[in-house]
Image (cartoon, rainbow, N blue to C red; front, side):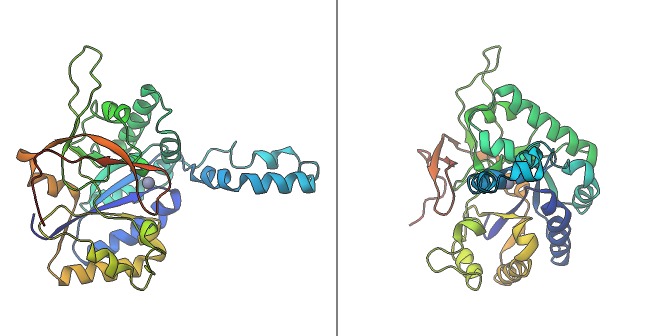
Length: 312
Ligand SMILES: [Zn+2]
């Protein structure tokens, strides 16, 4: 795979879809590049995440000012009763345009917030429903089923992998790791047969929000620090966000693309990385670990007995 970077673009929100995706599509077109987009296509409930963070202070203020008697009781329920807009319904044209540009189309989630916040509490039926609605929506929009899926926040577990194996994904990108692999599953199908999970193409590099502000990384030297982490001759998968690199960091990402291409790096959608490796995939377990700059755990590829690319 010499000097290759797999480019993965996560789209979490309505805003990211509406503004970030077209911006990234036109940037990639300028450089004649293709990437893998992972879309969230159901309700944008990411506001609830903010609500959760704000709640203690907000509630205290409500009690202090007796807001309910001033504004009526509905203010207490703000953001929890109203359903977020259905991204795949309102912004189908943008998702379709990305597919028409020749990018790989993957499923991030139906309800990003729900999966990320409750990955461990979800029943298999709810996981399956979330995947089914996402796959059907993307199929309806683009005319073809999504080639891949990527669970929100790398919050992947055995239950999620087992449900994914019932869909027709060519590969998935659910974990942090170092090389393409097939995950080892203990779950069996209802008839007792072994499930066959799809290959995993892990994210190998940190994200913008993980690196920024740590060890002297600022927006001025961000590109240098991410380029330093590229591993020639090995798997490199960079995950960017439509909300970030397609928004306020667009110019910085433009610089990144130009710099790495000048240095001879190829940038490809994830599926192309798999095409070169399909015959020799190792089987690996997945565990949980903490990652600097990220809250909570992420699913992480565990080492194999026969590492395929030893290096010193
Ligand atoms: Zn996401």
